[in-house]
Length: 305
Image 1: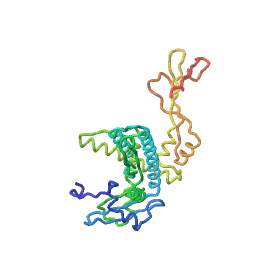
Image 2: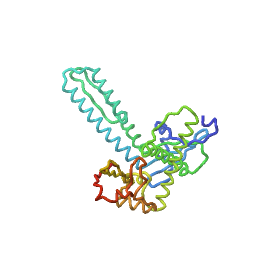
Image 3: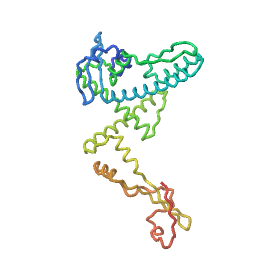
């Protein structure tokens, strides 16, 4: 559909497609685009698009740690089943197949790495398992690797990878909309509403990028998410003062920033007001003579944040 309308695309592919690029993955010419990221371009056979093979050292460590944990838990579960089988004088084969099937479903990430077999019959039935060397070697080789495909004409793999990484920034901006701004996903059925939703997401992204570049310009050393999280503790609160004649006086104040927040606000050249506007529903303000003469009107303070 994208090709029919003459559009350009740069998208990820299922990890199963990495098998077609095993040779390039193992012995290709890699180009560093970051300290921990390598990429290489691989033209398609028909020449209509280009594949971008990427490999991240950080992602590799994460995937290897997750696989080791899953393998450890699978082997522990298999040991428990094997102990149950060895302790029975008669083992129901259907029960055993069901238990093995459940374990393969639960640990699908690593189940293919193991050859699980049942030998013997009756009381001599035993459960055995061992790693498949070829499957384990392939998972080690593809750890941290992912594949992109595009019909863009750029020949620099670093340029294509950078454009793809921008998508993660868009997703981060949308997460900010749904978390910090509490704008939940809305399923629209009219084109005008879809366009409005896209506009809101784009405005959020523009604000996010503006904050990112501002933080970088002042040398704050924080990402937009970190800056917002740090300022989350700054709040406004209302101090309600009830007089003896039934009136309520409202003082709306802003909390004092801590050291880290003050440093960030100073770097951004922002200052917090000591007070905000007063709610119109209040019957008085702190500037009235009655509020200033505390000896005439005994007050009971109540803090409501």
